[in-house]
Length: 263
Image (cartoon, rainbow, N blue to C red):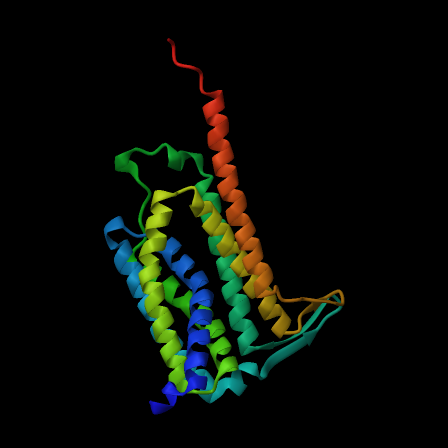
């Protein structure tokens, strides 16, 4: 434990905590969106339990990866066809499966928003809520995917288990606090739910591309390239700015088109 308080380890801890918090935002967004599927009275419980499970999984996975890291990187099988080739390992398989699931989830929720008859339902005909157990199951499944990515980032920065575990717990605690802020923001600004789903869709594409790159997948001789994290955050920032400007411009148009009140 004394090793944690060296200058080098403290500096690594600060950097790693910040990195884990940023990388965990995707996980937080997914949990916040999934929690909306349960009854309103249970949503806060689901969000907090989801984040606590995420922290626990990161600690467990950290220990497992440190012991079995070579197994995740060792090839499981390879293939070479006329249109595609690649070498699949545990790491790439987890990332591609998680990415595909996120894309499916985001697209399903986006199409659900476009269903007209849902908008006309009365108070007594509200949409059916999913069970807490079902939502927790899917949150737990995606926690594993997000945990795998963040733990590998931690392993790349240091080999000190105490530093890595402390950074995961501290960043996790911050995410628990932020989960309520994100949920309240989405509740007060429902138009940003669409933005959140498209960000989730992009996360799925990023995970799919990263997994494909690790698996050395190539189609018609063209290898899959991963999306740089800097590119991802730039695109997200651009989407947010465009959405804000679009919202304000739309309000301005509505005010201009509003007929003047009779004098």
